[in-house]
Length: 178
Ligand code: NI
Image (cartoon, rainbow, N blue to C red; front, side):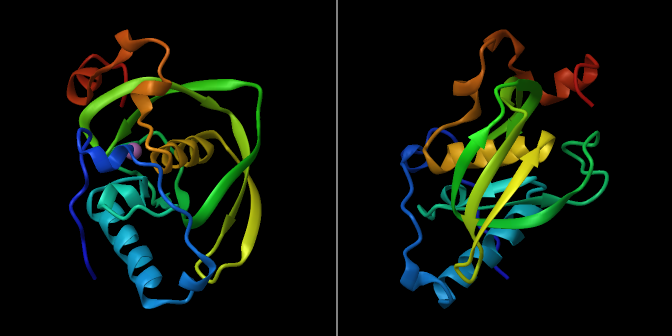
């Protein structure tokens, strides 16, 4: 099991638009290793989601999911561990919801980010089969955040009030986040 370093904001590659996983890559050791490394790296870094570009692999692959009482987001209900390859958002709610969001590539800071309350997503699984699912709440937020990564975007660009940006420990101290 390989755990990779997280690519930090400021690294030009994190701003690249990643490429789709081609059909002939499904079932290969390269893709299977990528997926395994992503889950391992996400868990080791206590992330709730990870994009392949955050470990230096410029493919449209994302993972998310976490167990109960996650240290970074203790208020959130657990989310099943999920893999999405070549994900596309098909529809999204007109309503936006706000929540303090963080990112492993921007350590120790949080900001209030608006996201669509629900989305429907089409993506491929490890074997290349397409699936389509509706997600809401925190899960929908994670997926929107990770798809942004695949397009070279980071959450501060989604914020509409930069005054909410803060140091995680200070926001906790102030009782703004848990
Ligand atoms: Ni992130």
